[in-house]
Amino acid sequence: MKKSLLVGFSLMSALLLASCSSTTSQSSSKDASKISSLKKDIASLKSQLKEEKSNSNESEGYSSAEQETKTFGINEEAIAALNDKKYFGLKLTSATKTFDDHGQSLVNSDVQSLSISNEKSVQFTFNYINYADDEGFLPSLQYFTVYGPDNVAATIVNQQEGQDSVSIGRSSNTTFWANFSQPIKAGDKVQIEFKMDNQETPFVFSAQVN
Image (cartoon, rainbow, N blue to C red):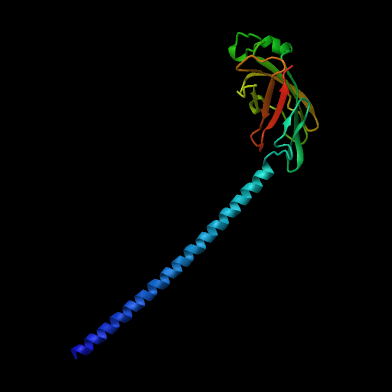
């Protein structure tokens, strides 16, 4: 009788263990399946987010098709486009050491931050046109960076002659001055970069100082 009970108990224990093992295995299999499914969903969402971000950048940022690597010379217009539509244009018309009346008033100014010199300063003039900006367009000083022959950034003086924000179809000129780290003479090459906050790449202008 004892042997019969022992055998029955052992058989029942084995069945319970097998049942638990089967349940655990099924549960683990379901968990693994859920994890795999979640990983696929996350990967899909990441892909969609990346695509949406890329499309957003393309639609919101100014671009310049076929102009991204070009350097513009004197009187060559750089055109910013938005959704393949001309938005604004900009061209360097002068890089000179012959200062106009405003520039002359800044030479050796008592206000150090506004002072320029005949040896280390250059006067730049840009022409700009508004093709499609409803709010008006003005290339402010903050968007310009000037580099000398040594590739060191010059200091742009906080003076801008010509600050008209032009409406669509209008154009104007603006002039500013930059102080370089070393003497600049006629014939030296300088570069000016222009990049607004939502521009994908800067416009690069190059010129010999006259």
